[in-house]
Amino acid sequence: MTTTAIIGCAGYSGQETLDRVLAHPELEPVALGSDSLAGLAASALDPRLVAAELPAFVSNAEALAAGAELVFVCLGHEQAAMLDAPPEGVIIDLSGAHRLQDPSLYLDWYGWAHPLPLALADWTYALPELYPPEGRLISNPGCYATAALLALAPLAEAIDHSSAIVDAKSGVSGAGRALKPSSHAGSVLENVAPYRVGTHQHAPEIAQALGFPVCFVPHLLPVRRGLLATCYVRSEADDLRDRLEAAYAASPAVLVLPEGVSPELARVTGTDAAEVALFQDRATGTAIVVCALDNLGKGAAGQAVQNANLALGLDETTGLRLQGVMV
Ligand SMILES: NC(=O)c1ccc[n+]([C@@H]2O[C@H](COP(=O)([O-])OP(=O)(O)OC[C@H]3O[C@@H](n4cnc5c(N)ncnc54)[C@H](OP(=O)(O)O)[C@@H]3O)[C@@H](O)[C@H]2O)c1
Image 1 (cartoon, helix red, strand yellow):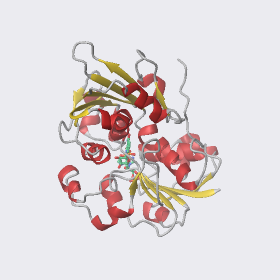
Image 2 (cartoon, protein in one colour):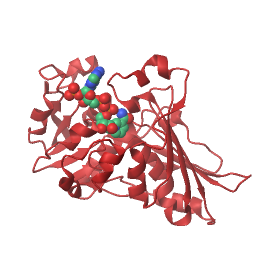
Image 3 (cartoon, protein in one colour):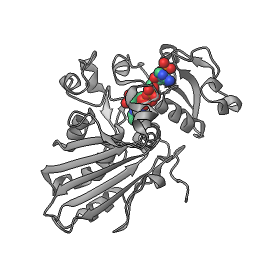
């Protein structure tokens, strides 16, 4: 059993990570960090945890110092950026704090100067199907970035880079649990709107991984969870489908759909899987690649556990939820 700590366990991604750790036969939760719940039983987070054999919450600092062999960091970006990584163990950061190699991009895109710029070189960006984890300090990709990269990375050498547009939509849990006016029911329900147009912090992460920038516009959907990215590219190549199918042929988590079948949130919501599909626009010849995933699953906790499994030499799918419900 690998002793496991979750820092920021009371947030949405921390809670989702705990859920997978509880379902994982090789991981033993030994420290649950939450500054707001420190001292309380795990069931303070969710009454269904009353029967689980879990330690009480401790502060995030105490959980980080607990000496666990595996640590999931589920904190906000700026808080995670200040973190002194423990000297041993596998650390998986679900925030954006260690995704960008160029420290100056943090001021440009996140709005704050990275407090530990030299430490960024110690972290590797890992998306299992495209960039498997290396080393023990692993930076988990963003939810939008995961969808955009699953759709576009296998095609990167076959498309006109200047043509790439990513039109993406996410459920409101993508904004986290903390209350803010933009995620009030009154703003979200029966509404759809773009946000951070042209300025979202996942844009540089996508550009870093692809090697070229894309035009990226996120939208907020009036659903709890799920994310859909519709990507538009120009290409002269006639093997785009072959490239996508080859990239994910061995993947237990990413399914390339048959011709004419569209990805849907309903099939991926609550799972750690993703669906990808390729279409061609009859009028303009534009290639359209669509990816659907759950922002808290393949977009966060599921991918983090998939990365942890690979880093620990376990079966890649252990503890993951890969099947949704049929209806
Ligand atoms: N949400 C997603 O879909 C998603 C996807 C990929 C990556 N991420 C990344 O994962 C990290 C954590 O995101 P998250 O969405 O899990 O954040 P979150 O739900 O806002 O939680 C972050 C922290 O806020 C505190 N918190 C919990 N409940 C709260 C409440 N009701 N009011 C105020 N604060 C509360 C908790 O810390 P304390 O208990 O210690 O106070 C928690 O650890 C971020 O860096 C995010 O970018 C999120």
